[in-house]
Image (tube, rainbow, N blue to C red; front, side, top):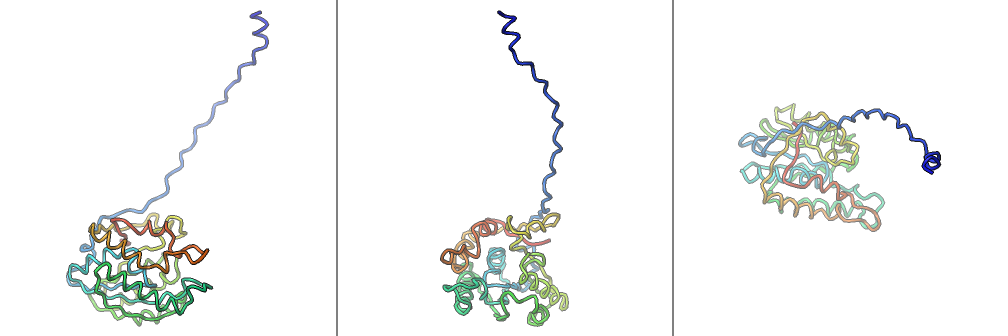
Length: 252
């Protein structure tokens, strides 16, 4: 019987050797340098923020600018556009309404952060700054010793990149310091995020109470964080998450 059973046993399978998988290298990450707001700006330097849209002065560096304002630095914000093109085709948010609402949202956000800034509204066309870079550079009245903050020149938004080119040119002309900061490039699913690989970022530590103040300030941008009927908000939750927390970011 044992022989009969044995004759019906399936033949043992010969296992093939599986070659070891070549490890996939991790994606390159940006190099991080610790910083504080005070380490970025010389004493008595005026802080100038070039904001392509009414929120770009708060979303990424609001806590940093607030901390500098606390230290007695004068703050000037160039509001380059009124953000009127954020909701194309919307019945609830036509361009004229956005021109009124978005600057007020920005003012409310700055107040939440305790920033008593001088705001200069330039009224240039939202979405059309690539053609206005030279004119914008002429609008930026900078002085030697100013520290200028502007979105990164490779941020993946044409208005942000145009503002960077203009601010860099204007700062170079007078001998001001220009510091770029990523906005959309910080959002992992945005195409510009990959451009941060191999770059060096300053990781700026912000005071705990200003982290909370910034969260309140961001809620002032209701036109941007609320859905428009069935349309997703302009600023998705993933972006708000990338811009929140106790660290802020600037290019080194």
